View 1 (cartoon, rainbow, N blue to C red):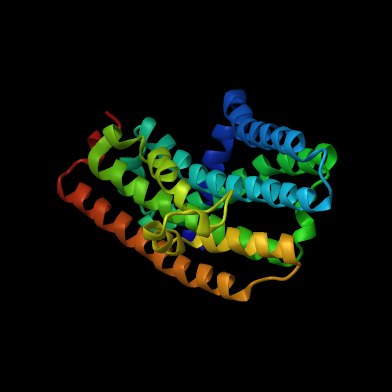
View 2 (cartoon, helix red, strand yellow):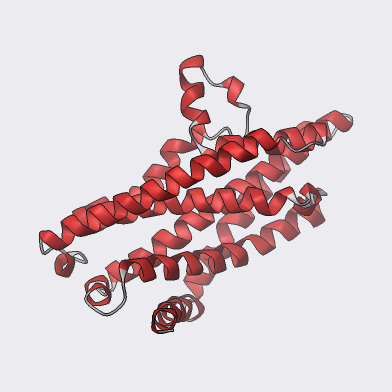
Length: 265
């Protein structure tokens, strides 16, 4: 119960930060809405004059936009919550308190889920009302897709958080840099087969590539590819476990150097 109370206290602190700041609230909703609006208008322009196969492509692209934004939101939700503690020079205080690193991670994951859920609601509504795409038509596969993408986003966040903890604010661009760097290999808007042969193994080592291949198969053929889903789950175990190990190692290195108290400078 003590651990749950500490996790709840940190989640509440983050929620008060968000709810009490209109710029943070605007930022939460702004980018998903912009993404789905821009991509929806582009795809409508491209496919307005074509028959149903074109509209199937439209559905696949809009679904990919929404699901990739889930990945981004989950990653940024955890990363920015962690950065808030660094910017306020509070991380050192938290880590010398009874709060364990594991409890810190669980609380930030909880905050990430809350922020991602809130951020995606307007985008999902806009996609359904203005572009005729209801993401829930994906069916029972949707929560499985989302779970895998959120877990992958967390794995990237943990690595980025570890780098910032170890190297200070000089590494604070890592959450964005890492996600931008891997996006071309995640096969979000195109099949893995589009990539050069040498890069296809790189894509297939990333859980999102399997999720988006599965999404395209589901939209285009009406069937869920369980092989891609199984690969995504298996790879996510490795990615999330690796992210936790990297974060723990970099946190330990920062503590050994006595750098936690200077991390906000």
